Amino acid sequence: MDLNTITGYRFARTRDDLRLAPGETIVAGGTWFFSEPQVDSTGVVDISGIDWPAFEDLPDGGLRVAATATISSLATLPLRPEWPAQRLFAQCADALLASFKIQHVATVGGNVCRSFAAASMVSLMAGLDAVAHIWCPDGTDRREPVETFVTGQGTNTLAPGEVLRAMDIPARALNARSGFRKIALAELGRSGAVVTGRLDTDGQFVTGITASTLWPTVLRYPTLPDAETLRRDIESADGYYTDPLGSEDWRRAVSAVLAEQIRTELTDV
Image (cartoon, rainbow, N blue to C red):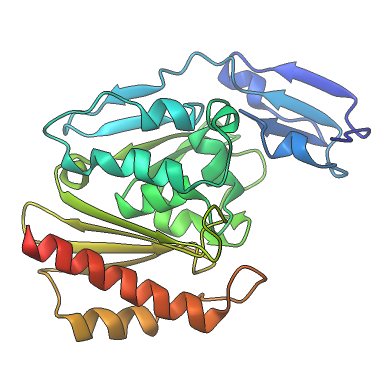
């Protein structure tokens, strides 16, 4: 790394410490930030020392995941029998093209806030209807579904000075049966498409398409759709793109195939 523009580094301990001076940037794990020059940053505010519990139970039986929780800690959270969809935690973590060392430092919130198309924690949180809890610089809070929080390749709705505090996963999503598929052009390559699926206890079917689109695509059906409906809806979605790791047409086609595999899997169980 070559961060010769950085002249200051401080640790935030309280919410007041998150008031940023011009040129300051917030980091948690910092695995991306420290990997390349950051010519627009002159200072770093490290939030890894804020005393946020990594995981908290929600009143509805769901789970709050702190932005500073590491990806590895989420993936290895003890399994709860009442949360069948918890298996997505490890499945999505494994979809991240990163060493085990990175997974032990990289944070869930950092991965979501980088908002790359192949961000595995975006796949997880969008697929489980997680809601982002955001601290605003004026002292107020706001909440937004992760599926709309990410707006493009590396872009999101965070305004200057806003900080992602946590993501809340509702119990109804965790209580669902789930499916997961990933494909890449190389065996250990960056995800070309990641598809998650849920069959909620009320019969609702939800599928999330990520990595193949620039922003999360989440489709919802009151019951399991037929194969043709699902294929048509996925192929007509916006946001598919071409880069060296996959063409737009390929991403669209494999997303439909993977979603159908999940639909069949959840139908047969």
